[in-house]
Amino acid sequence: MITMTHMRREIAEIPDAVARLLDGSKEALAEAGRGVRERNPAFLVTVARGSSDHAASFMKYAVELTAGIPVASVGPSVASIYGAKLRLSGSACLTISQSGKSPDIVAMAESARNAGALTIGLTNTADSPLARASDYAIDILAGPERSVAATKSFVNSAVAGLALMAHCTGDDALLAALAELPGHFRKAIECDWMEISGSLTGQSSLFILGRGPSFAIANEAALKFKETCAMHAEAYSAAEVMHGPLALVGPGFPVLALASRDASEPSMAEAAGRLAEKGASVFLTSAQATPAKMLPHVDTGHPLTDPLALIVSFYGFVEAFARHRGLNPDEPPNLRKVTETV
Image 1: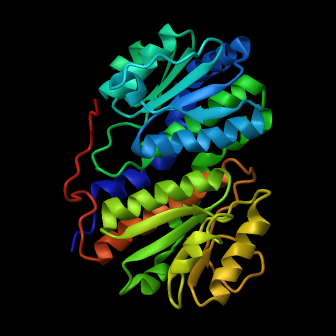
Image 2: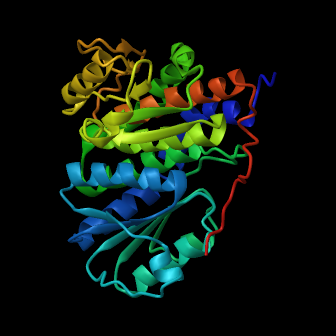
Image 3: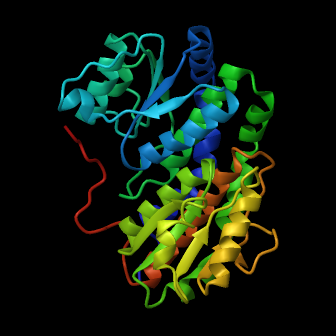
């Protein structure tokens, strides 16, 4: 059995990668934050795919909750395939891409810039086409990532986005919370979630729940299940799962509920409890009273950084679970590290 994968090494590197980002890109993040504040955009659009799009979804919640700026996701193919020109004057455009060279992402960034948007690019490749297409290019400094499944680059993208907005809004509390993240992430890596594995035996699918910022994290977790474990996982808002998706829930159906220490935690615990009462095998990252089983989790002291500690713990679990299933998470079938979509 494989005991040390690229994915495992890269998960272990997350605390140091975040510390490197916060130190090495501090000035660039502060400058970009000032640029957004001076532009005072009426709205912000995001452009990304895959795990980067989950980081963008996380940023949607963070920006709307901290800055009051509405955020919408724009499909990259709007520019690259359809050639449509959006009316983006007075807006800001945040693009996220590890490689910084996917043609559709770059095309949308260039189109947004030509349409009058202030463009900010988050990329793990400093001298990339996306960086050159951006008014402000932020190197997320995650370092080389060899695993097909993104881990440290996802976390660093989300942390960079939070730091950008903290500088934009002058949020000293968030900046202080970000500075503490490397230590919290070391503890998050040590959280053992393998208790979940027994409930997944003989199952072909599971639900992963979140709400608010943690819903974006649930989408990232569902993707990682598919990528590394050859198992179908579907992410739902804890509010939405109680509607149509509830029809799939029966005795023993596995559910992972990623609750953060924020205003949504009581509703997350309530939804988890209702699913557990229907016989589902529910695991919850909260100590609030519920029939669901509590998973160990790290309280970072800030509602916007808590979800990131959860994904770090999840990464450690899903890598171990893939190996438990006899799979190599570094070599998922049909996938490669960089997908350049036109």
